[in-house]
Image 1 (cartoon, one colour):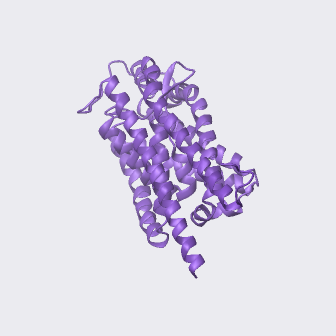
Image 2 (tube, helix red, strand yellow; image 1 turned 180 degrees about the vertical axis):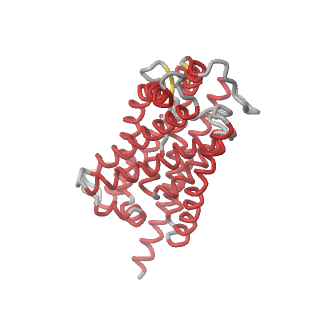
Image 3 (cartoon, helix red, strand yellow; image 1 turned 90 degrees about the vertical axis):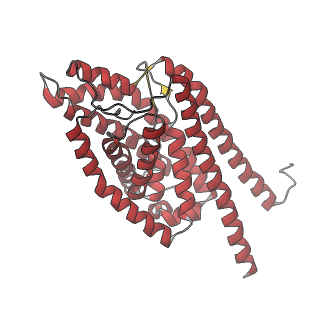
Length: 113
Length: 224
């Protein structure tokens, strides 16, 4: 679209869509980072595991009194974290789309009044 | 980082759960009231929950040679208020505890207290203090999100130090050890979280000003 010759409302719409597109691309990149970047993070020890090491230094032989019934493997964990990030992106996208509809409805009501 | 399942002694786990109940109950009440008075705030709630889900899923390598993740609490605490964000934070922690074995059910109370409650109230308090001092809007948002993240990890360190005092230097010595451990890994992530929150808040400011200003009274009067 030639922004120089388009109407102001069209330019505004285009600018708005660009912002949404930037946000969605940014969030998608974050999801990709959550899935693929985690492969690198997996090679490192998590801060929670580091904390457990410090607890062992402070109280040698201390054992957790309860262990979770389900502990995902590294690869399953990566997929689950990716799913969590995807769920987040879906919620944000839903909120943006719903807000645009809500706004359009409000503007229609305002112009008909 | 959340405190792992079964790590805290049972009395501490129970104590933190009891301490978290009143703010969560208050948050649920505020949420019902907000939905009744401003139904459109459901959209902001969805977006804030999404932001928290995305950011807390980002397990990133840190300079300390370990990995950790941001909390994503700051944005929702500014938009919806700390009481409602406490409830939302609890939902995220419950999801992670049940499905990812990250955190835990026995330590949910302690993690909710540190991340959802303290994180939310610190974000809101820092933002309001920044507005009162007439600091630039972006700086207020950045400081609120970054300090909320750091406050979460500081409280987690103190919770662990209280449960596992150093045999020689006591709780104080253990606190220094845990704070040192989390501080190095979390400061860069807190800065990243602050920057991301500013980007999202600026988008909201440009495209949904009226909606956000209705929910967040300090937003309209905040310095540009």
